[in-house]
Image (tube, rainbow, N blue to C red; front, side, top):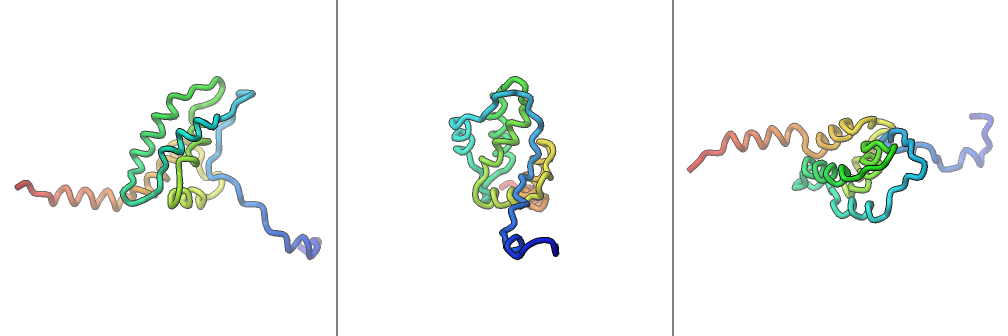
Length: 136
């Protein structure tokens, strides 16, 4: 630390901007995601509102990405690259707060996402509502 100049010490930090998702290696040479695909994903955004259902979002997202087939590109890599574009508002903030390199598999991402936006307490509450329901 003593070796650094005052100018260097006053520089804004630029480290720490890594993504939470670790994208699997892609062997394809000229792979790119087209703008119309991004627009399709962004048309079905997840906000993280109480009324939003993360299970439905994941199901719709998987349905869209299952149609994508690229040679030498794992489908999980495509899902990982596109998923952040499907999030806005509270959901995007949640994603950006996830630690860098903390999501290694699609199942990791689904579990974290669902537990954040459909926590066990919500499941318990809904089960209790169902059990208290009496037919007239």
